[in-house]
Image (tube, rainbow, N blue to C red; front, top):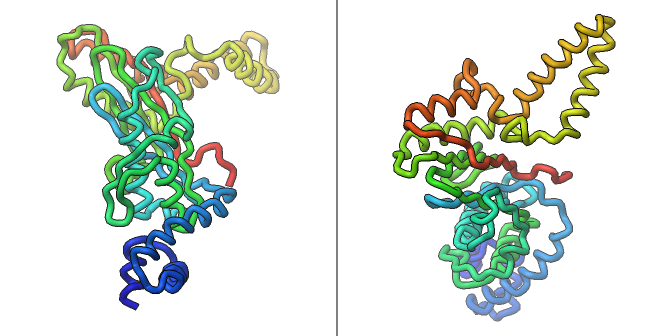
Length: 309
């Protein structure tokens, strides 16, 4: 029983699998450990067709760049597992170390699992250690936790000029982990400007992005198709009121302003003080630092979004 306990603590594998491995290896714990790892690949492949809609986002960042990766599993129970969380953070740190074209395109750079899966990664955990590939690490954790585990996607963001990258993680069980992430870059025109005020406001705006779910940075970036579609819907709704054409046009324009307030970040009311809009907040920040401040990019991502359970 002592060997079973030791091997179970070392691998987190189900007790039935641990005992079977020890028996087949004549109670040689190292051979049984190796056998479990080998068979773990088979066990994980059988689970890979099951839907993995739960999971976590992991964030890693430095002064110039931030990366968010999404690691999925089948249940919230496994998302709270310490090994699963360690792997998610390790993948984010690995992704941060990879240079991407984001510096050149100055935008949020999305990537799929294929971007990282063959990358070598060093793991330093009592139950998960050594040098392996990202794909093998994910497979091994899937065998340990007994669920389908998938590295789904990631995003990298860089600042293109003097400024800060700010982030916020919602429903965070551990630093660097969360269910929803908000990221943005704040850039200041004067390269000698201090960044303390930008960091303060940036943290609040990252939280705002998570709460308010903007789709566009500015009104100019809303596609003409989206505007016309919304205008047609609002016009039909207004016409059903039976009011005059002039009144209908005023109703539509008023509701279009409301639409922009809902989907455009700069037009939204600031979630921490709804008496001001985000663009007014940036104007005040520009006056405070003595130089023009703008949002370069922003991103909102939620674990499991778009996956049908």
